[in-house]
Length: 140
Image (cartoon, rainbow, N blue to C red; front, side):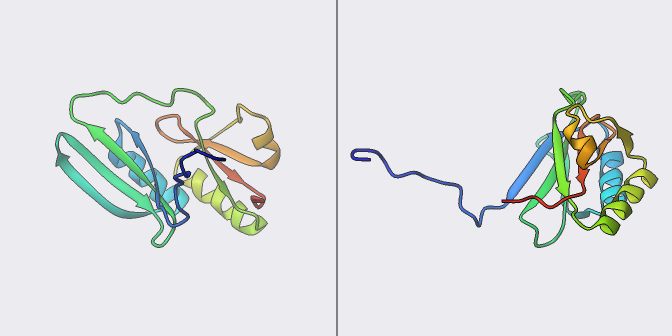
């Protein structure tokens, strides 16, 4: 279109960090490491009043950051539709992931949107945020 500035897009090479606060930093770290197989990629203590940890998989295009601010309560999930969805199309891999999550204390909960109950299993972490282990491939 004439006169329109070129679009500035987030590039395909961008790395995504999903960050959220928690009041239970150490417990959340254990839950995601033990239950979902994440690795600790980094962390910090008392950085301008914050403690934090980055969890993910080396080489993946994303990681999760959990932070705790000294003296400030984080609270829990604002709604049951705050989801992280992991697509696991192989049945055996999906079943193993569900067993691992449950063994690590993830609470299996009914999905707010019933679509996810038909396609996988929904779990709540210690703060009430939900993770869906979807048993199908995401089609682009």
